[in-house]
Length: 284
Length: 284
DNA sequence: TATTATTACGTTAGGCGTAAAGATT
DNA sequence: AATCTTTACGCCTAACGTAATAATA
Image (tube, rainbow over all chains, first blue to last red):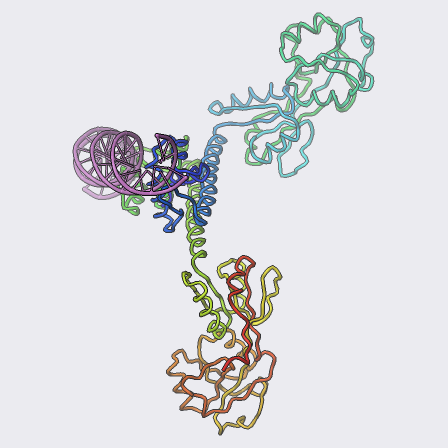
């Protein structure tokens, strides 16, 4: 029977060109490789090398054998990864979300419903989330709209409404509502890790500049100490009472008022059923 | 690294359902299999079994691992066979022919031109020969017509003309030529191993019966001792002067006058170039 | 009691490295 | 001389089987 270790030595020899170099690369002795090559010829039952007194090279069959060996090792690697990934999928719920807010509700529910499971979530843009669904990398997805594909299970879950926050002294402070086109051109403070909101802002307000703050403390400091407008939503928790000094003005564009949908394959529907739809009015 | 031997034990366990039976089937001891299964879990890095005190079964991941193991073992088997087949193809010229006569000229030429090569020939029907070409099972093919596929190299090689042989007393003996439709209904003596001629006779003369003789001696005896018509061609050698007592009448149908074509892949053209086209007039 | 998995243990075969030989540049 | 492959040789690990253990049906 073939031995993957021996095949790896064969491949290394093919790459290095000489048994000595291959031995060096694999941290084994030259005699070991010599013996392995002889043994491989026995196993294959054919001659794989042209031998001179002081040199050894692959013959045509040997080259073919190397090609097969490469395929086989890669197949073996795939097998390992497939099994590990499958096992992981049995013990983890992976969630790909387009925005952070839905996760604040999804993660606690799932971790109490499935205390033995690892729950992994990540923010991605919409195309990447669709890929995650297709490849079954994630069992649960959160998208800002209905999923196009009807072989997924879809359900609306949560609404999020964007407002802009300005100091009382700001030009817009007296408005009871605004639109993106009215906001376009102003510069904004923005947090990082806000999912699809980042790209939406850039699309809807192409004339604006966005000062993205990676560090939360620095963001809060800037909100306090500057008059730059920023954003909030009905879901945001203002623990620091940062925005009490500011005026919150709803953005009326439909793009600014999002319904999040839970999406999953039918085999993962149990996860979804744990998550009750959240009525925005319930949120204090 | 995965060990194909260990994977085979895993598969056997999956088939047998118990470690003891698997051990028995593989002619190894139970402890060996126990250890192998433990080691496989180490290598995969995941749990593959549900263990009771007195029983062990595959869990979901284990079932997945068995599936992967099966694929891998079959890939390994394929790799072995591919390399061996390739090696064989370097040392043998395989010829698939639709009729025996061309081989009488092809085989001697090839074996003198390639004395170190094994030359393997076999008679097959036309579809099987085309498959042999496609799968590269054969390097050289002999077909009774042009090859349809233009990615093969084609060359006319030899002509063979069918005649019917009847005793002088036979109804047809005075004819200078005949057609299949005139022969249809007569019963004939036929040799076996005559390639496509056999099927052609049955197609062209559906009302006839053919007494196929596997044994050459018996065939010759029947030719001598019966008045049943038989066939010969311009290429047949009548070493026994079997047919001197008989009248040979050419069959004029185009199907009875065949041009054999050599067909091969471009990479095997060297073999074909050794074979000079044979002018039927040269044949004594 | 018979069957099954696992652990313990002793033995051995086979694989590895060191050393040496033979050969080439 | 330096480099490379192959053979020879001795060590030592690691894999196997036997025997024992524990548990089940």
